Length: 532
Image (cartoon, rainbow, N blue to C red; front, side, top):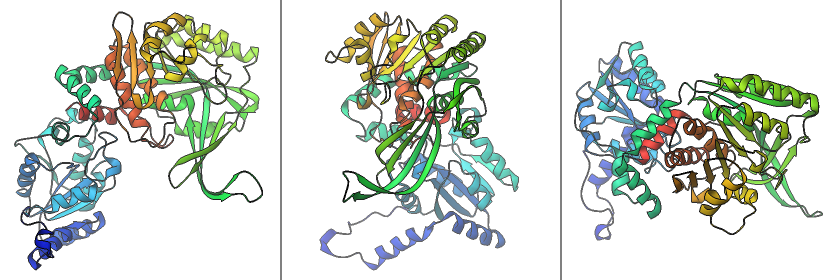
């Protein structure tokens, strides 16, 4: 039962004994998952039956109340677990309420006996720990095919392993996301108005259909191999004898970046992915790269003698995850003639078999003039990103490609390509970029300003950024390109392409390095949460 009454501060006094007792009762209900497992064992030994409910419960509402009330009737004891903040796959700015607050709200309900916070993406481990007689889900899960996370079937199997059963409640339903979107001031006015317009247009169904349309696509990526190394350090202070900052090494992570990160982003959206690239024979990192590729990503590498695979080592202040400086280990000279011929031959042999070819061109020597011509001549649909970075500033422009079917670059790259510093980005994308590359569908990503898209005959669309929660910007543009390129090839309108891409970018900036990829279930959950 939810307690109502005076504020603790009313009258300037302290809580009375009844209030303190109620608070203790609520807190005593909140347990660790291991403690709930021990309790479940004792309760089962005493002949009691247990019902388990698991969910996010970001905003407790009447639908939840009825759902929990129904669940309580399925057993003697009702246990509820909530997903920990780090594993809530909605948007980077959700949940609104932290996991300990969500647990306390649930514990305040009279018919909830115990509450725990689960540090995982599904309830499978909780089910196997508690072994409930009934595992209860809401009506949204009546059809397993509607579960974008894909976990309900596994959870049903887990509860049936020990003879339990999955129960679906049928009562009034509400959406926490919808209520939060409508009644809480979560977004800036520009984004709020934009999302309201998208909801009114019914865009969510068309967006989900577009994402589903590319599931059988085959995608070929041609691009630079990059290994991203994060060295976490603790600053010690300025060296007393030198003009430099001293740091103490703590630990390191090494990721498959560059073209490999882009391939992993697209792997859960499309059926088959292939990567054509070159690796150095010195310090190739090939084992690491192959280990980190998704199962449906095939690697077709050429090997260069006497050079390393490009490695970018970033030194990161571990307390706030701020980058201090970076060191490149690479040889970005152009491929020699025999290897360039071998690369072009591979592309000619393979490109025609794929629905989409994506050039992730970081300007580190792989893609020269003859290779750009080969890509343009052989791809059925060519998507291009040419990145400007510290090693190639001003020398790796999208103008190296005479034409493409889709171009996705950021605002500084667009300005460099058009030699325009001051005009607004709408003019750059709609008037100037089409003058330097033959391409009818363009996206310019614009950081905190979101993105701008252009399609010949349709004009310019601006999509605001979807998050202010930025952990790491590395690879956000690659995620945007990788996810949207097949959708453009499938005929998606550029306004929806920009919407999907902004969501993919928002997910990526919430991930440190390449610890995770943008996955289809998480993206779909994000999109539907925004548009509820």
